[in-house]
Length: 341
Image 1 (cartoon, rainbow, N blue to C red):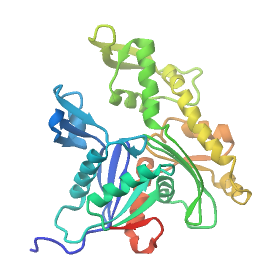
Image 2 (cartoon, one colour; image 1 turned 30 degrees about the horizontal axis):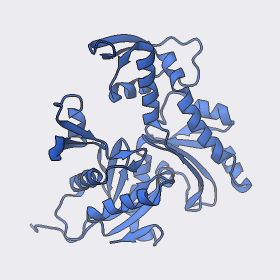
Image 3 (spheres, rainbow, N blue to C red; image 1 turned 90 degrees about the vertical axis):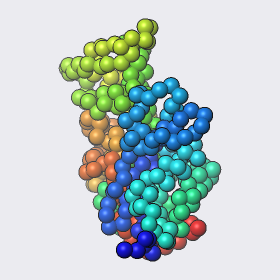
Image 4 (tube, helix red, strand yellow; image 1 turned 120 degrees about the horizontal axis):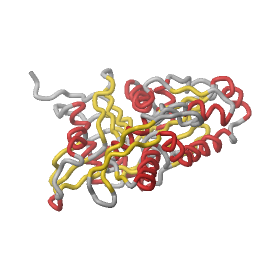
């Protein structure tokens, strides 16, 4: 058996604030792990990345440093991001290849030149010979199965961990878009802040996220009774604490954050060209991303704007699947947004 293969497969890398996914051509998503690195103190020795790092959070000694290389959808720690991405790509395709991979990489629509360069540089450092950048909203629309290459408008709202991407897509491109750095993580922070203020309890990010997923309804709260048992640490004493939390109050606590997302949707809806407005009224809005499945979020948006709203199947993976489709057809992408190394 040859020690290496001549041609590496084309791949898509969806670098998210909370999770990074790697799609390999003709195989699908083969890596889906937390975007986290754990290192040992000042020595910067890497102890764990991804799933194995997630398991150590909260269970490791004080000299351990937890690093999240991305914040609000962009790279904030270039060195750790490079190490993390290299680990995930190597895990996905191995290290047996003589030729470097061609990569489709996702990126928020509103990033600075520095943030854009950081992603490109990270891809180059892992050995990518060609890089194609696709905006997350377009990839999400494509992964949802919307007719993005047809002369009709498709409206996508991708609520990730760090950013919410709202876009109108038509004829193979984004006609109009708006990106805000308010998404799932801000919702979790609102829940943690509420628990701290109202119950004097500190909880982990994981607990806050689970409470978000356990909400009964984010749209209607009247007449509801839903109580959750929450475990954390007493702010005053530092001792373990268990409290009963009214989940209706939790829904109310995240309402301001949800209003910001509604504001981003309104911004795009108010600027849609008349020629495409009828398409949106007929086909509606499609929700993707990890927080798209918030209970009755679709109903809240539909009631706010008077258009039908649907949550995409496999909403959390639509962006990766769309980028993966492009990796499957890399030779058809042309030269737009392509960088050769």
